[in-house]
Figure (cartoon, rainbow, N blue to C red):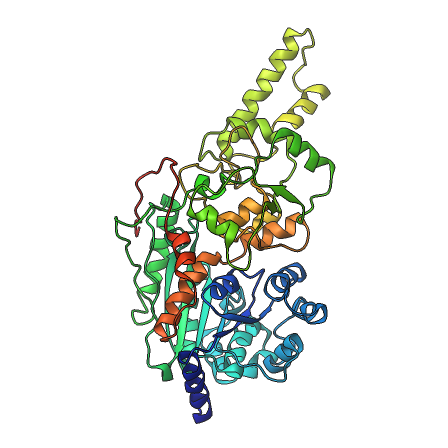
Length: 511
């Protein structure tokens, strides 16, 4: 490692330990979930680089709204990090001739480097400009190139658990080895967001790398809450962990939470204070364009510490009303939603739909208006009542939230439909709103989403939960000997509960 690089890292660390603000660059930033978590710990988000136009605008609107319109527009421009050198790209965004970066965060898509062999990853690590010559490694190589260019003290990466076994290869281990080759001590593990105050059982792979000159082995935050993971999650986790066994130095074992920890935040605790979307409101939204900036007034006070945090997150206070509380119009399915039991999936919904069809046919028969099976009228009624998907092919397409349990994982597929997250309230009988999806990811109510409704859903489903990122950033700063600037009262909002809702006994199973 060049002496100049070593000197730069040590100078940055001294500045931070003297009270300087950590400066963070978010690559593949999305709408800013990881940025928000690091900002909560007292970091400055220098820039978030993102290729999707709506996500780039969302990031700029939330993290750079204090800048001039010209500079905010520069931050909100979508950028392909493989097109310009790191220095040119950041100069274009910030307007500064040079920017000091202490921490680089982000999650390049694993597909980009899953196609690259071990030898190619090592070549990229040794030759940062290799991505200009070989498209197979562009995104991963660009990440490494930014690390080479800005010489951060630490890096944080996020990805899906399958990164530990992508086509039979432990890509996570290759990433760790490649970063280690350019001077970083790396560790990775799987963490579930529900153990960190997020009302969602979202399992993801995280890697932390700290420059070797810091003389510190990276570590991960211990769980703050406990939850029994569903069987599918336990199986995925066990499968992924088998691949991490081949890397005992880099792969960190999961930490079992104490049974004395508070249980995970439930869907009801996360959502119950948001305005009810009545039949009239459903009809109003169906007839008009969904305006993500329109406010609906809160109709109750916060019922617990999570709701209090979502309304009053420092810098993202919501005031008296909530925005983006809009839903998809699905009139065919409202009655099905209302009859589904908590945790029910698509086969159950399909059976309910057929029962509704029989009931409608019987009503028509009693009125003296019988419908002949397979007739045109019969087919029309079926179309108006029964979803067209096969229950055998799409068993997990629909799912109703459970009031007393965290949500299942939100995915980017929310941009296409939201059947995977049907509201637990039988009377509202609908899928979740954009704001409810944001709450389940732990985005505060004052966080705004740019673009149309479908785009906002996709941005949320693809994001790192801010409270998960907050726990990671706080632990990283502790390892670096840098004090987190998150206030004690703000921390307490995440970890205490005032709710009187029924709570099941929960604990994490390692599978």
